[in-house]
Length: 157
Image (tube, rainbow, N blue to C red; front, side, top):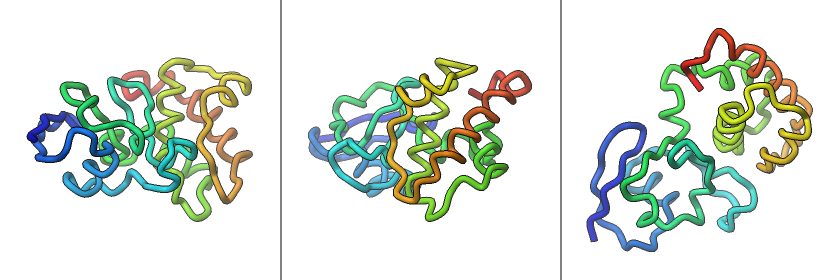
């Protein structure tokens, strides 16, 4: 069955079963491999993408529910890696293995859109992605740095 998607501003038509997880369409059909598979049960967040500017775990979303909506992957967040969250990640040397980072960055970008100056409680409540390397202290520092840089990057988030 053909399903029409808009991913990173580009329209695609994919021929897949309607219950195929969005993650696999993104990775296998569209060849956008920045979104990662990890747990497969929407717990870890490595597969986080935005649908209509809201963070979702793409491993548990059927592709049919994403049809007609705007999907953004890590590749579409900022193709030149100048999004304030990406720059803060670099500044604070956040990743170790890096596997979870695209999903973490997507979750944080969504957080900062809703809470431009998040408190630690906001971060704890809304960024529930798992990092096996436990770089949470650097993640929190990077979130606050990105939030502090918002005034010069208002249009990017």
